[in-house]
Amino acid sequence: MTSEVTKSLSDGDQSKRKPMNGDQSTHRKSPDRKRRHGSGKKKPEKQEVLLPTPPDGGWGWVIVFSSFMIHVIADGVAYSFGIFYIEFLDYFRAGKGETGWIGSLLVGITWGSGQ
Image (cartoon, rainbow, N blue to C red; front, side, top):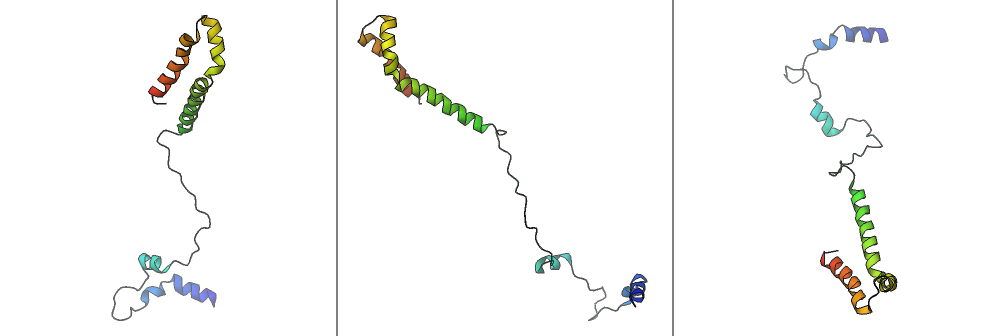
């Protein structure tokens, strides 16, 4: 019996059907209707998430790390000036008032430049 059904479908018997309710076109579901009511297929469990491309090409972390290192070095020297102060007194063979300008200018220029 299966071969008869297959034969009748392949012969084009479906095209001989008469439309219902006076409609002259064959009654088929439109793709929109299928989408509205669901296609009956399961949605994929995992969806691939696409990340946007960074505008800097991915080098932003290098800029952040470089800025961090500049701040560590500049602030480290400025805030540990007391350790270098004794060496500056011996090197320049000057008084404390004259050698103190080195630290004052260092901190003043650092803060004045906006760091």
